[in-house]
Length: 375
Image 1 (tube, rainbow, N blue to C red):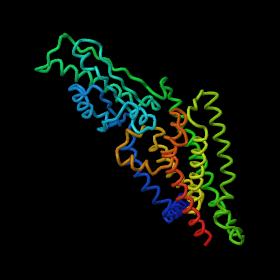
Image 2 (image 1 turned 60 degrees about the vertical axis):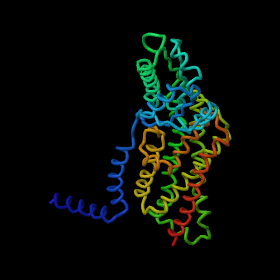
Image 3 (image 1 turned 90 degrees about the vertical axis):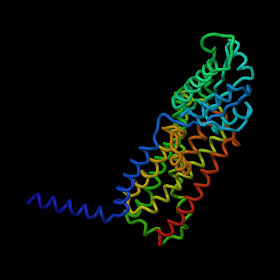
Image 4 (image 1 turned 45 degrees about the horizontal axis):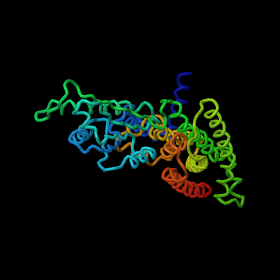
């Protein structure tokens, strides 16, 4: 009967799936892991954003204001005493996200009824994620000032609400262009997907086609084989990057405020690292299907946890630790820095060396895995 034949084929395919332990276990375990990890880690409304308060006033208001900001769910106050220049440089290097500056005559103006201003500088490379934090700086300031006005023992010569203004300066992307936030990371994401998949399929295709035996009788060294395989894919990546940059500059008017050499170094380091990961996957996988699955399991966390789509500051601490091990995390930061924050090669180095280290590790593992494949 047709039903019996269909059932026999289905059982055979199920047995093949179960016996393919790498595919079967990865499908179950990684699916569960992704739901749990991304359910907790993805947060479009970040909290506990790194914030520096530059206090020139040294008054009771500034002390209460910093204490109130620390209690806010949106801000995480850096307790170090920094100058305006130091805080501004940390903002440029993405070592903080918000800088609040209280001028020296703030309390005097506030208590005499004159307009008093607080300056808030925010890293606007991600124009959406800091809205809650920026709003909270003004709300907390007004609440603190109102508390001082009405507290026992505080006498003022003014009546009514405090004359307080919070002046916000959105740096690096003052127009709030979402395109300027997406494109720098998009370059790495496209390379991550295309180079990884193309390279991961290279050796596994030879395994399935039976051409691996021909390589066994050649005097080719493992590293020679790897370089020979990645050169065509590398050239494809160069073409992709050229097309993306042309579109970004001429169609979207994307600025390049930093050193072009810093961008080239970042692209080279990240491209070579991605190719090394692809070779490692292709050596470990037994079929093209496994290579596709392993590639997917690598680049999906990279895309979601690197800060490309969702703000890094919105992730819990354990998710931030995971993201620190992803090369795309450093590429996204370095790319946005060179496009929008005037990064030089010196500024790029803290984001460049982790990518290079990952490339070295993945490259050594790929050579070792390829030797094992030949054996």
